[in-house]
Length: 123
Image: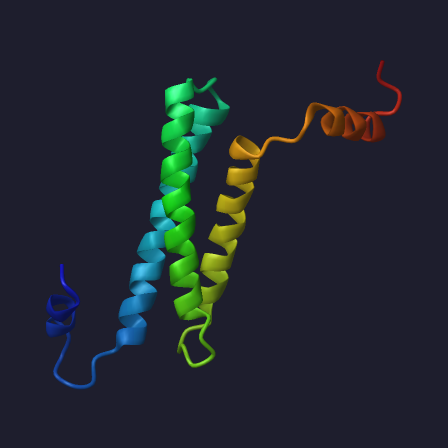
């Protein structure tokens, strides 16, 4: 659906691009949530294949880029709905954590050091 079609559906008057954008942001956030649910089932619950890991990396890269783009847009001080900024900031934190977990793993030495600090009495 083109923006002109979406705006044409609204009553005559000044189009609410802010509200239209918030609706798209919420749809985008829902899309990110679906991806994170899929990720949990296919990347955490199961051991992903190298091909699935590569697909995940490509999809997550696009999700991050587009979420950052949306976030930059709604972060403008004049954007009318501040809840959109909070929504996308939360999604960015989730997606960035996902990237680090799967595509920037902690070096083994660092992981062992952390485990020793957290569980000092373990052999």
